Length: 257
Image 1 (tube, rainbow, N blue to C red):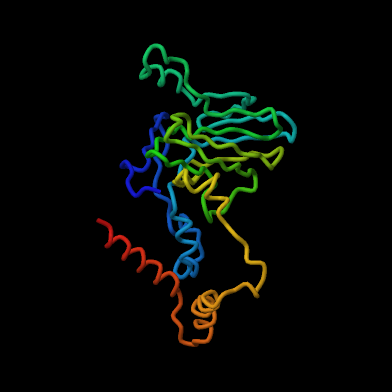
Image 2: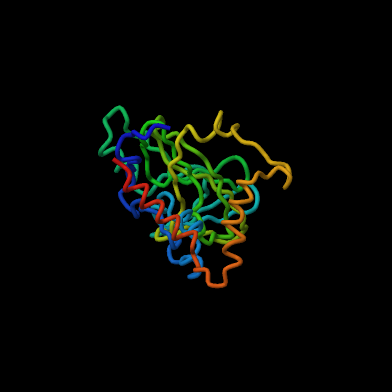
């Protein structure tokens, strides 16, 4: 992987006029992480902060009958509408007011119901462009409590090559009751992934040590330093892994040209 890349790594383009813009993900998982984990578990806080939060562009809800029918409504109306494909309210006129004439009325839908029961596509109202060689992993927010009313499909989008809607597909899991999406709470987390590390040769480059007999002296020494030595020290400081990791990151940054 080359150390050289275009700056910025990712640019988000807002198509919908409303809603919260993307923001860096939060080490505390928006304040929901247990205090001890936030203080001492660098693994959790690093995962939580890796990437950017994307938010629903407005408050809206689904009701699924368990079969092929989904209805939805949104803030500003008490009506419910059968969902096949739906535009963001007033977006067509907004899009056409900016789009070149030959592009008018080609605005992507905000919501779309699939033929498969209970599966719905949601557009964040964003388009993203990444530096060459970089893609975006689209996934649920790391370490955030999730609604029991739906589940996510994850996907990797090659946003350096594909300039289109940044959407997600969800599987509705609650029937005959409203499933609400809150514009103040992250819907998605997108994380930068270099194309060299997924698929192809990189994923094939691994091995498995079948048992303890295959451990080498350097493995036992590493195990001793990581597990045995701290466990045998009654005065060991908490969060030693986090401290050493942060020091290494700071050292790596100081070595950058």
